[in-house]
Each structure stands twice: as C-alpha cells, then as structure tokens.
Image 1 (cartoon, rainbow, N blue to C red):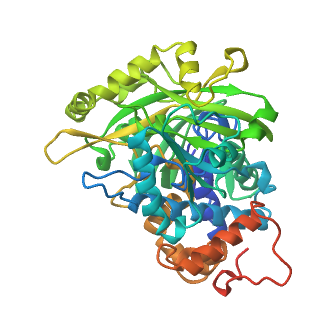
Image 2 (cartoon, rainbow, N blue to C red):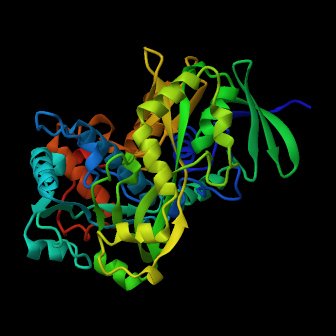
Image 3 (cartoon, rainbow, N blue to C red):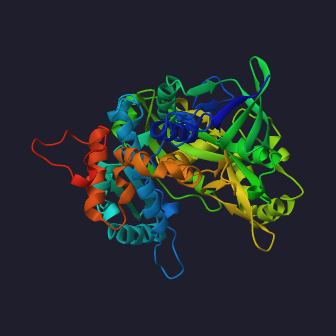
Length: 504
C-alpha cells in the first residue's frame, strides 16, 4: 500500500501550529494539512492557560525587554519590535472573530492593565529612565508613571507598595490577559471542520527523515504505526523539537543544545480578590534569574473564571516536556553539541545554581516571595500548580562555545521543506508574526496575487510600518481593541482609517 501523501504536516498541536494551519488554509484551502498531536486535545502542553503567563507580551511591563546600558541609556529596540509583533497577533485574532473562525473574543482575551513595579533607589531610577525612553515612542505614549502613594494605591489596591522607602510603577491600561489554550482550541475547532484538514490525536512522531522532495514521517497512534509523506513539515513540538530535528539530521541545528527550565505558580481562586486587583504587576527578577522568572502577580481568566496567579518559580529539570520522561534532556546531548552545552553551563553557572536552589525551595519559601507583593497573603489560600516546561536554546558561537538564548527562533532548511520553532518568550504572543515569516519563506507564492489580497484582508497592517507611522498604529490599535471587545463600542459617526477598511 502506498504511503498517505499530505501537502503540509504540522507536528504539535499548540498555538503555533494552529496559527500556521489557519493562515495556509485561508490563503489556499486546496492544500491538504495534517496536524499530529501526542495528547488527546489541542493546546494542552505549553499553550494551555495554566502552563504559561497568559500575558499578551507587548513590552509594557516586562523590564527585561528594555536592557540598561553602562552609559545609562535604555535600549527600546526590542520593546518596539515585540509591541508591533503583538499588534499583528491582535489584528489576526480580531479578523478571525469577525469572520466567525474564533468564538467570542472574551473566551480567550480580556483587558487587564499591565504594570511594572520597582522598589529601591536604583529600581526607581531605572524605571524612570525606562518610562522616559519608551514614552517618546508613539507605541508607548499611553504609558503612565507614578511614585505618588495615592496613585499607586489606586493602581495596586490589594498590594502594599509602600513598605519600601522608594517605590514607583508604570501602567498601561490596554494590557491584555490571553488564554492561549482556548485560543488554540478555537482555531482548531474551525480547522477540524475543513475537508482539507486532518487532526490526529494521541499520536507521536517516532521518525522523521528526508524522502524524495519532502519528508517521510513514521507515526505511532492508537491504531499502531503508520507512515506518511509530506511535502512540507513544521515542527512546533515545544521542548521535543530539538531532539526530533537532530534525529532528522537537520543541519541548521548542528551544534544547538537544549537548556530546559521548569516552572510553578502559586494560585488563588478567589474571584473577588482577582477582580479587585485587576492587573498584571511585573516586578524585577532576582539576581541570576532567567527572564522567564520575573515575578508577577496577575489577574487571570481561566475558563472564564477570574483568579490570581503569582510566579513563575523556575527550577532545574531534565525533562523537555511537561509530561515527558525524567531524563529525556540527555537524549538531546550529542557529540556535536557537547562543548556548546558544557561551556554554556559553565558561563551561566550562577543561573544553574539559582535554578537548583529554586527547585529545592519549599512552599513557605515561595509564599515569602509572594508576600513581597502581597504582605498579608495567607498560605491556606494559595496552592502550588505545575506550569509548563520551557526549553531555551544554546547556540554555538564562532569560537565553538555555547551561548544561551532567551528568545524565540524559527529555523528553516535551505530547501524550505521544513521549519521549526525553538526557544520560549515572547513565544505565543508573537505567534502570528512568526508563522507569517514561515509563509513568506516557504510559501512565497501565497504572498502574491489574490492570495496576498486575501492576506491583506486579514492583516491590513501588512504594508504599514507601525513603528514609523503613528497615525496608522493608533488607528489599528483602536480597531483591534474595539473588535476584540477591549474598548467601549465605537462612537456613532466615528470613521476608521481608510487603510484599515476592507479588513474583516
């Protein structure tokens, strides 16, 4: 019997795969698409609501996106880039809601203000300089600053931000909380109804190898082993991506190594307290902590119910997936990346020590951290919840050493028949931009002619430079917030920027 043939195979059923599948299906529904997911449902690994921060990362509150330089200047380049990329995600989601391809927006996104909060003279000085640098750019013009006790009490009513002698905060009202698990499953439900799309659950890829002009993939599912041939493969398998790429001998990851990090949340289900807080308050990371471990106290909406989450608490792990094997990380260590892994471990030994100490911390230790935000927090009201695994990438340098990366990276083979997502934050928040890059690189024909016109209907900002065009950026932001229910309804008689008209 001949192997089943599919145009596009997506390995992993998270937000990245469902976003790419939606883009491809909307631009050309004649292509056959298969999504392979090892669990029984989509979005249950890194995309699940309690396995990530749920923050719509727009660089409003995340201090690590605006590094301080020795001369005192704040570099805002990464913040501007991430803000634009998140706006692209909002634009795509707004269009999907308008077209009925996603459920009501409140099922997956809510308006929750984003705050940065610091204590101490150095912290206040940094935040003040950060605010001045960001507010000069029109994308951050709405960011407010205060060190006044009455204003801080209004912004953070359940906290006690005055215990320290020096304290300050910034606030952006239009921050968001995003349930990426609900978003993933919403996109997946629409895809599942398409005749050209097949979903295979409880199924793992056991072998991936080049074949003809594409890839031959061996699958293990409920009915046993099977194989299929794919013209294009996208690997969105989270921490499992690197070992699979190594096994497939993808030369673009030669020398790459994995650095897995575990996570925990403290969770309080008190809806009234969460609604009284109604904010995501990001603090400063402890010395030696990875960027993903910046402490924050958040109002979250999990399956429509408000709750409070604090964390995340990082720890050292040898797993690559949340429900993975205890020492599966060792499977990613090869002769070709051993030096990169060991040198990166040595160069980041302070981080390794920090992660080990965090992994040995007790609930009491974690409650002490929470009480720096919420002094009167009661141990009995908070439970520990295991968050998702994050696998940072170690890349080889020209000198052969390893450099630990904390961003998200898409790699593509030279023949453009395979792309894969590696890394973590900002991850899901910039999923649309990341997958759009895959379309541009691997399916250039979909960036031309009628397909491009369809894409412009989804993403009217495609031909706009939001970093340079303040008017277009403001109009697009208002459009997205209105269509996603993040602003009051449009005033009678108000008009929309003509460059955005014609979009969903």
